Picture 1 (cartoon, rainbow, N blue to C red):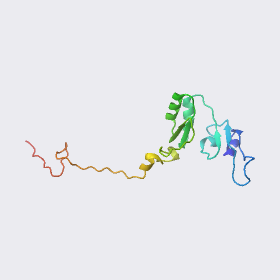
Picture 2: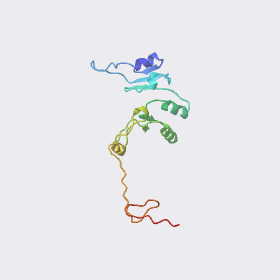
Picture 3: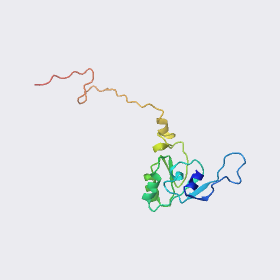
Picture 4: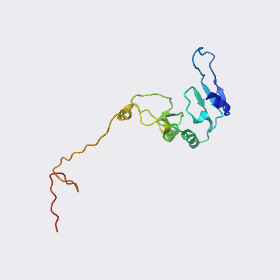
Length: 163
């Protein structure tokens, strides 16, 4: 992904390679920040599982939401702002299964965890996660001694029609 970002014209602000302090064995990459990213770049469109941040600028909340929501993925997102009204508007407008506000990736076993779009269906954790293991069934038993509207329960006879 780092090479793809460079080839497509994004600028590496920091990182982008193996850290000098990394052990000789293993696969290591320094935390990497890209600037001058555009919406058509691979590093913007795809989910990168590694310490890579692709940055873009925007001029309005509407544009920021459009950029964030123009994705096939929708697991998690974050809003960082000192403006409470803005945080609430953006969190409501993000199309993601999880939205972190002024924090990043806390996980509580009581809270549902799961994405939208191609980032998953259903939820893990919390009551919602437990419900996916249940088979819901409705069972109704008529226990009244009176008929109900048009329904005539077994044992009742229909009154003869009056002419």
